[in-house]
Length: 112
Image 1: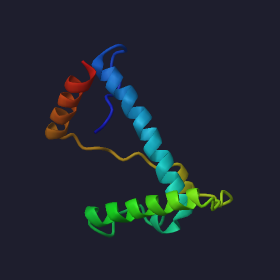
Image 2 (image 1 turned 30 degrees about the vertical axis):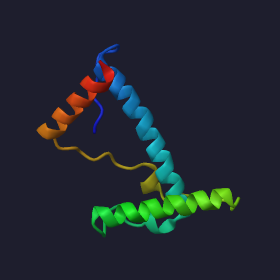
Image 3 (image 1 turned 45 degrees about the vertical axis):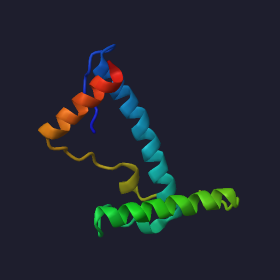
C-alpha cells in the first residue's frame, strides 16, 4: 500500500495516509534495529532468496532480537550504519490499478 499524496485534510484518504505514515515509521524503526543487530541483513538491499525464505529470515531475526532483549543482551549502539542506509533513495513506485482498487476498498472499509 502507498500513501495518498496531498489528500485533503479531514477526508478518509487523509486519515488513511496519516495511519500509513505512523505504521511505516514503526516498520522503519524495526528494520533499523534488526539491521543494527544482524549485520547480515544489511548487506545488499536486494533479495537473494525468494520472498518466503526472506520472510522466514526476518522473522527469525525478530525472534532472536526479542530473546536478546529478554536476556538483557545489549545492542551495540556504537555501530554506525553506512550513509546509504541512513539516506535511502526513494524508489519510484509504478502505478498499479489492482493496488489502487485494493487501497480504495481498504479506505472505504476502515476510514468512512
